[in-house]
Image 1 (tube, chains in turn orange, yellow):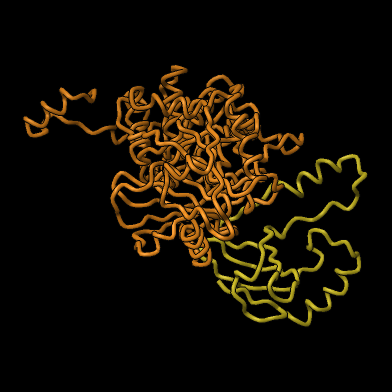
Image 2 (cartoon, each protein chain N blue to C red):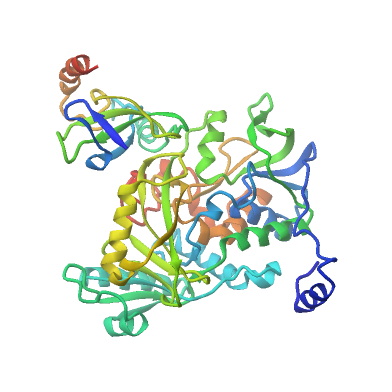
Length: 417
Length: 108
C-alpha cells in the first residue's frame, strides 16, 4: 500500500480495516542470492538498494532480535557531512543528499529535519582548523558557514559565551545537516526492501557459517536452520567480531560502549545540533522536546549495552559548561550501544576477506548518518564485486598499505577516535 | 568498575588509562623480510572477544605502572590483574621483562 493523504483519510474513515503490515513476517528459504546478517539500518538499506539499484531481489536480512533494536535504536539521530579528509567527505555528503530525498524515495516519513549543526569554536587555533574543514566541505558541495560570535549568539543566546575557560568565539555551521527519526529510518528501509521481495527474518540468530572445501563462505547457520547463499554480507556493527571469530578473522576493530542521554521534555529550545568544542558534548532537541545528548566513549572493550558513571558525569559536566541552564533539568533516560570502533576512526566497506563474504563494519560512533550511503555503496560492492567509488577508500587493506583515514589523527587507539 | 592494582590495591577504573588488547607480541626483528606484515598484524587486528579479555591499563593517577587485567567484556567482571611484563607494548628496556617476572611471581 502506498502511503498518501488519501489513504490516511480513507483508512481513518473505515476503521483502518484495509491497512496492512509494513512488511511480511518472513520465514527463511533454504537458499538466497544474498544473505545479509544484521537487520539494522545499514543491513536493511543494503537490501533495499540491492533490489532497487541492482535488481537483486532474492535477498534475506537475518536479524537476531527485532529490526532496529541495536545501534539503529540507540543513536542520537544526527546526520551531517562535516568531515575534512577526502576519503570521508564525498561519501558522507552523498549520504546527506540521500537523506534529503529519503522520504520521497521510501514513501515513508522518516522525519528528516535539516535543522543544521554548529560546531562551536573556543580558540583562534580552533577557528583556523574549522575554517579549513569548512573549505573542504565547500569543495565537496556540502555547504558550510563560518559563524562569528554574534551570529552564534543570535541563534543560541542561552550558551555560556563568557565561560572563563572556554569562551565561545564562533562556530562552523553546516545548514543542511539535521536529525531524523531513527526507528522510522529502519522501518522505511524495511518496508521498501520488503516491497521488492526481500525477506526480513526477525528473531533468527546467525550462529556460524557454511563453507565449502576451498574455505569460501557459502551460507550461514542460523537458529532456524542453515541458509545457503551465493553471497553473505555482514552489517553487524558492534557484534561483527562475535561472528567473524567463527571464521578465524581478526579485524581492526574493538567493540566499545557509547552512551546517550535524553532529558525530560521542554519547550522548543535548541534550534539544531550543537557540539561543544572544548569538551566532548553534543546536543539536539527531539520533536517530543527532550534534549538528546552524548559525549565520549566509555573507553574500553565492552559488549555490555550499558554505560559507566564516570563518563556520564563527564558528559553532564560538558553540558553544564556549555549550557548552565540545564542544571535544573531532569534526566529521563540513559543507555549504551556497542560501537565497532576501528583503528583509524573510519569505516570498512569491502569484498572479502574470504570468498563469498562481504564486510560492512567499523562505523565507530557515526553509523547513523551513514545509513543510506552505506547501504548504497555496500549494495554496489556486493552486486558488482567492485568497490563503489565513494567507498573505495574504506577497504580493509588500507591498514596494510598505510592509507588510513584518521580524521582525529589519534593512531590505532580506538578509544581516542 | 574497580581494578585490583597489584601495587595500590583495588582502585577506581577512572584512575587508569586504557590501552587495550594485551595479547599482541611486538615483532622481534624490524628488518625481517615480512616485518611490515608482522607489524601490521601486531598494531591493527584485534581478537575483540565477547568474554574473557586480557588488556593493558596504565595506572596514571596511582603507581604509574602498566597492569595487565583479565576482564570479561560481557559482564565487566575482573578475574585477575598483574604487572604487565613482557607484554608491555613498548618495552624500551629489554631487561624490564626479567625484573617484572619476579614481581609477577610475588604478586600472583
